[in-house]
Image (cartoon, rainbow, N blue to C red; front, top):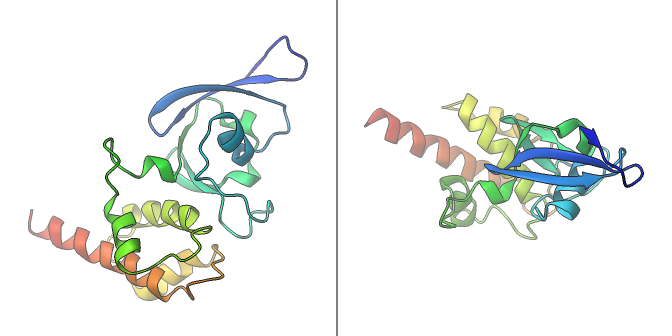
Length: 169
């Protein structure tokens, strides 16, 4: 974190979706606001600003975290992944994003980016999750539209597909 001459602005350098980025912010700016306003990662949605709804979830150094609970200056030199970083280099959707589409696991889409980031980390750790484990992981995310059933189905489908591919590789 480097203070710059223009008053109370700090220079923050981090890796966003695999690309080195630099931005400037006030010391109290939240990471969620920094990512959206300064770096243009508008897939980060801000809901409650209290870490309750999960809409602002990103991956920080691989771990799912609420970006509304972290100051941007605390993200110096960290690696951040947002929903924009889930798609491939050519814009092709990840297997998790495709499963959400296939299972109609989104309606308004406001909660979806945060859920996708939490689910991507979860599936890296838990290769054959039970429905209960998926629901427990989702307990930190509020969705007002889907009733969670299609979200759970999509995550379980991806886990099964990945396990099947790994088993036959």
